[in-house]
Length: 278
Figure 1 (cartoon, rainbow, N blue to C red):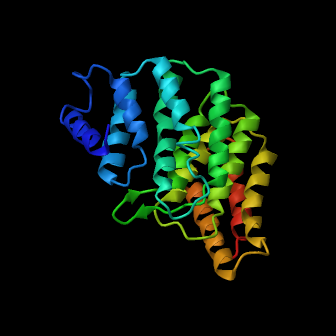
Figure 2: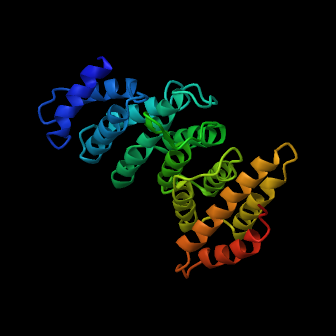
Figure 3: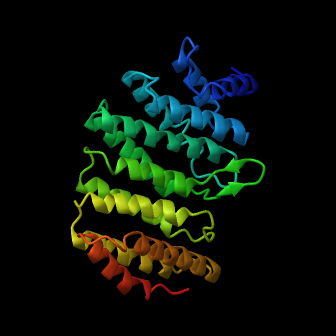
């Protein structure tokens, strides 16, 4: 199905509360949506394909087997890893909207499990690699809409961290991968990336599976990241700003939490943040 035909069809669904009441095979439509998930048309990509996927998944339109297949397609080499490593090209939209399919599918799995430990480990491995290797960190792209890789990746990490199949080691690996995005040196985030990443970190902490020394080491590593000798002064300053803003956001997000590890984290942030030099 051509993009124009798909857009026309999805516009009809949107007028019908986005539920395919008269569609013979919604899964076939889903496969077409996956083929066009990286469209540079922001209406088709964001308002139609993504919203339709999220709505249909939440309303149980797909079977468990179909959801699992959609998940595996979303994280394959032609979607989540499509031309991974490129910067400032349109390939970013395929990656960043593929990763956005992970949260609604994992949400259904938490309500009625259909993914096994191997499935979750596969998602974990792919997502961690993606977070570490995604180089295009643009937020809003003029005429093409949201790319927003750090935020979308953090949303997926937040949902994955809630899985009962994620152990302490998996949570540590997610923190390390998120740190790559927190310590971005090429630009200063201006599209609430700090908020989205902090939400993921809070979810990881809320599992209360990490040792306190794991958390302390991770926070300390954030402030030490701006000592790399290969960066320009501008890159070092931008990186320090991203780290500082993230730590401030995290602190205020957990400021009313009285249980551990949150009281510990607040104390550690106070220790670390003064060491982050702009």
